[in-house]
Image (tube, rainbow, N blue to C red; front, side):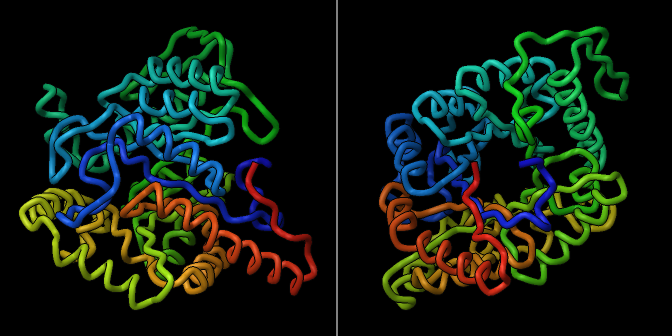
Length: 380
């Protein structure tokens, strides 16, 4: 289905998971986590995830030890390994403009896409962690300049992937008669690998509307999601485009709400305070550096920061029934995909597939029946 035609086409909400290719799991806490950052664990997890209804996995990108994450596997190589270990799962590699040249990345992703039968994707991360650039001797650009560079990066990727003799003349990148072969696999509605991005600032929202296929939001409540979707869609409409919307969430599903709430309480009570405070200082500086103060994390509190991307705010915490109802409520607002983190990945991904996902599909079917339209179909 073409990216963007979401308003009038019933489609099942999709699910992605954060790949734990970074040590420490998805919470900055000393709570026990039966999650491992190594490849063997992640290979088993990827297979289990695609067998339990997940459409995508997102490999994280960190280049140096920081804030409770002492070890990291590089995202693009790890993503390719997971693609080759699975049959249907689409794997999104997070990358940093400024540390990659778009032509080199375009070549890598084209190869990964060919090898996986068209399942590779990228998440373009403009960057919030200054040390990842300066400790490699690379310049650290002002906030909005980082997004200008990212926009050019995406335009170059698309040009290389879709043109036989690519040309581009920008402030950050230039191409001269560049011909990439083989190109990524093209399919109806997918002229090139899907391009995701995150960000909360005005610069991020406008960039998404102009060039990205998907916009990832940090965890947010209904009002915050509504505002972001409105802004991104409004910008996209100015350019004759539409953008799909993904929402970050940390999911705690248990047989009772009390049990789920107790898990959340314990995660926060055992937070690694030094790491959370360090992370908070770094990301709040990034949020305040925007022209209008709308950057990510600029209003995050300590509890929010225990989960790197404000995942507790989305509120997917409770019984399977409560979580399914909240997921469908977000879908009504325009959320197309949930990017989920878990405490104990292997067990909880399977619990989600067996206990939560069937309820989501039942609710979607009931709403479609009530509206007199065909039932939502799962993502391809």
